Amino acid sequence: MIPVKRILEEKGNSVVTIPPLASVLDAADVLNQHGIGALVVCEGPDELKGIISERDIVQGVARNGTDSLTAPVTSLMTHDVVVCHPDDWITDIMATMTDRRIRHLPVVDNGALKGLISIGDIVKQRIGEIEQEADAMRAYIAAG
View 1: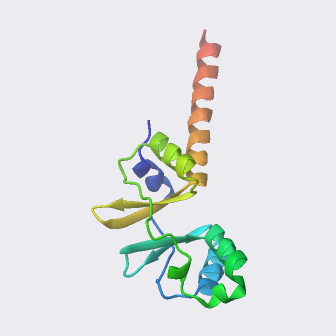
View 2 (view 1 turned 30 degrees about the vertical axis):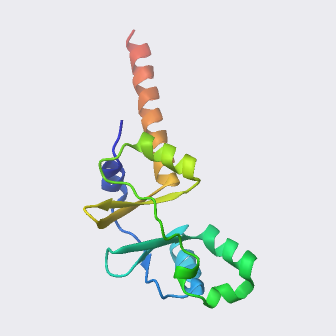
């Protein structure tokens, strides 16, 4: 089993954030600039207030039209954010993401934002593990 902190060690703990009063259009622009799917909404450097994803923005525009683009991100963000911790196991995180139908989990330690884990990060990690297992199996067969 692999803990979340191992993914952060490999990918880094940089998180793209946005302030709560930024507009939804600003959020869409930041998402586009960075080629990412979610932004963590923070009051200060690591004070987690919410999370806003591409899906939140699309649903907001579908419900309220383009007026939602000038609203603050707080109007569309998820306020009750599901988070994980550096010592949580990847298998548990996969289950949480699947059960909750979410693709991004902020990593929080002692109340401070430490990173962001995406479903893509987990898939990449699992593929690496599977490749290592296959290599070990091939080496075992070749030696036998």
